[in-house]
Amino acid sequence: MTRLCLGRLSITIDLNAELFLAGLDASLVRDTDDAPQGKDYDALRALAADQLAQKFTNQWPDFEKALDGLADDRPLSFQLDAIEVEDNPAVTLPRSSKIQISAPLEPSDANVRFGWNAALGPLVIRQQSQTEKLENLYTAYLEPGADQRSNQKTRRHRPAGFNDHAGLCQNWVCSYCAKGS
Image (cartoon, rainbow, N blue to C red):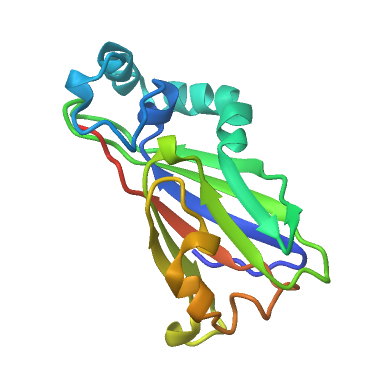
């Protein structure tokens, strides 16, 4: 989903909201059944989609604190625009939640960087654009706690569309890698 807008960065994140809400450290947990917060995680997994969405919305301020966004050297302030939680017919399987967040950009912003706290786990970033060629778009797998500044690919490769279009809102799709069990 790509959306162009003047002066805004738009990010769609696909994540396992239950991991965050249960307080699990996705960089360490391999099996949620073995984690001290396993029962909390299971209780969250049993919630209806709308209930889980409301819990996440209520905890948004804590999630936002775990985000690291910079436009040039200026910290970005993200807002939660939407959350969509898939129905969970089988609580033994992980379910996906998609959040849409955004932050304002200044016309002079030339570089945007994004990452998050290591406890949220690894991060896959895929920049999307309707106007840029695929080979010019940024894609990266970031280890827990890393952002583009610490990613070798970013230092060597600054594709058009990633840094050149600060006036356009580039929609990044960020996939939460740790799905839990």
